[in-house]
Image 1 (cartoon, rainbow, N blue to C red):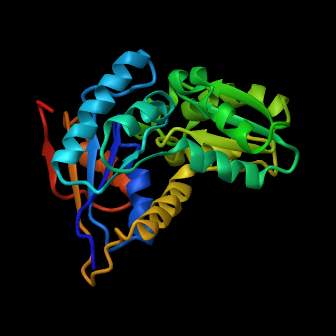
Image 2 (image 1 turned 120 degrees about the vertical axis):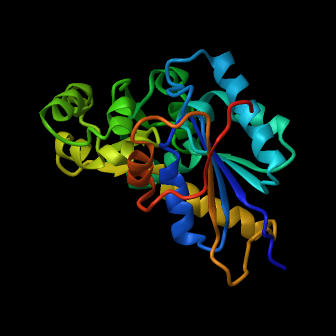
Image 3 (image 1 turned 30 degrees about the horizontal axis):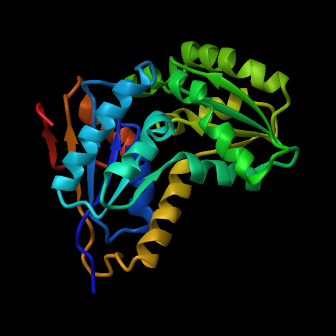
Length: 267
């Protein structure tokens, strides 16, 4: 029997649309309710308590919209609020950190993994803790990159300024001779080309979006919640503000036009 309820996905802004895109690519029948907290982006410079408060508000909103599962498509919220969300919610809640860490462990050849993310994600050491679960000998080097989210949101995906900023952030990681780099923010896949151009040769980039999608599919199969109907799923987007060039930026993240966008002023 097809479970027609949607999958809930949320992020501080539009970066989580990269996860929605990955979900749609392997679970095309599943409907998605996406919540982008665009009025309060970025989360990366907010306190832990505030991030937890925002995350719980959004989870309640998604449960009211009959979500059968919630994907925390935000590395900062996954790092700081996932456990509280899992205790609070009456449905499965999946973050992006564990799937990304597992992919990195599979990819590394020299057991030295780099991590880039927001200040909050890097400070939390969430990736380091997750990686240690799989290999206690793993070495890590991390770098907070606070300017990359605004660059991605504003569409500054190439050019001299973007290259210079990315080079500045990645130089210490290159010096540390990492061979695998976790893109620890769902905004960063948009900057994948420039990031790839600024890391040492043969460095593997880990984008957790596709890994998350595979975990979601496994979970839905295990719990018999897969939508196996013949109809293609829909994507409904809720945002807390519609910034300038919203549709252009959203389409860039999603890889297709954004339809069914609604603004929510009171969660």
